[in-house]
Image (cartoon, rainbow, N blue to C red; front, side):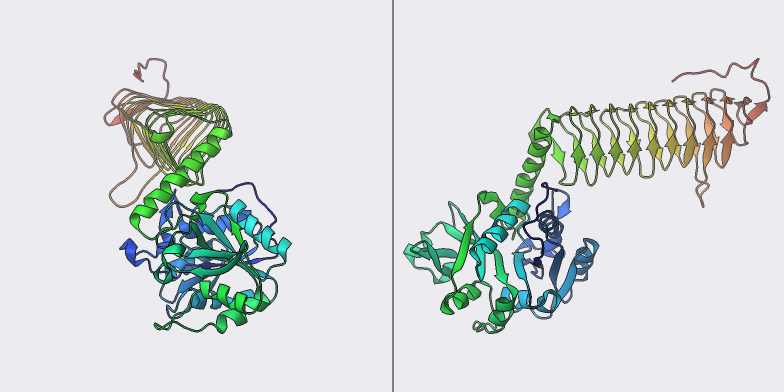
Length: 463
């Protein structure tokens, strides 16, 4: 989700640690690829870094995690591989070759999907202004159980103490380490390489704080203004909690931008969705993926739109739209299903229980209820009567139906593709049309007979 952009990380490199296996998630999917509000945690972090001005991000993946590497490259990031799971400092060190020895580096744990560009930019700005060697994000929490505590002396960081090593007084400290670090690259890589491994052979990023302090460098701790940004995801419960926070942010962003959401708690909107001002979302609406809705629309109740673009002044009742495009002033439903590859042009109407798949419905056309248009090209100002079906599949291949401008398709017509119905042509009620119908002609009967003149027809209609 874009947050408006920043230049704070311009010239920086970012390292996202995404090699964690997420054992507590009990999942075959890499932890960083679990989704929050329709986007993977990895993608949310990379988007936040980009919004903060970072132009080069390196994702550290485990050797066997081809999916993480693929997702990183798809988002425009570089990939480094941690060959063996030897701790977070070793994972960060795997990115040294891709980052280089010059400039500044931001290191982010890949299980922090709620970090915002503002939070990241705040750390970068503070680090730059202080000319610090090493800086980190912290946050005050009510329950710090399980996190490393920030120990201060005269206001400055003197240590990070992990819970297992903390005494009672240290455990009472509410300021914790978030897991985001800013450092000078020239100092960082040699410092990480020199860290002593634990008894298990692992090296951890908090140990870099001790190394900096022992070398006489001040360590800057930048508190986060919003505690929710520090919410880590290690379990399914924490994933659900992060989902709730992110979706609340999305709803608030849209409402602040002029969108009416009748019942926010009953409205499900993904992070990548955009909605224009003066649009109303009724209860039960799901806007998913890359959906974009224009101004002055009315959506719902109980409508599901995925990867769909909607123009202005559209009305969509309780329907499902997937991968579709709607122009301005379109009315849909309720109970319609518009499937991928479909375009509904300006002013068109789709009645109850209409289904459209891989088809174009021209401007001003009307599609009656209980109808199916599959692989069809419907012109402008066409009437599709109730119960009309395009029989597009012959058991082996799909075929297209083309209906010209101003045609009138009677109720319960069966249009057997491949088929062309000319401009101004008509079909009678219950007709089974297996042959092309010339412009202005009529097709009546089962199988339909073609009449070149419509003067004596009574094609019939019921929309």
